[in-house]
Image (cartoon, rainbow, N blue to C red):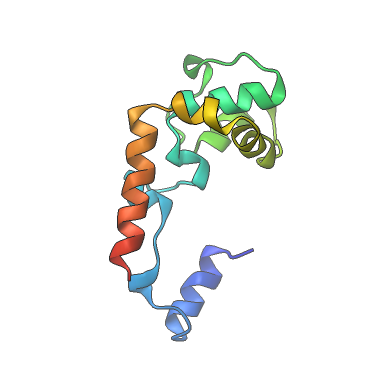
Length: 118
């Protein structure tokens, strides 16, 4: 797993070009962000709730914390991030049809940003 320090060290040593690095925070306009943050909070909660049998609402999430994972950990503690992803993969057609414009825009913006590095 790469840490931010290792990424910066790779850039400084010339092993990685900084213009080829894309962060999720850059794409969504947040200082700290994970891949899960490409989903709107409501969309990610739908996946999380289905994966864990929960019924959380966006209003249950603490504000002032950037990352959705950290916001959920405030409620339920640490969790396996793979399970919500697995829920998306298990029912892709159903889940993709239900995604918000915000989520779709975020993924489109990520693709566009990656393409600009080529």
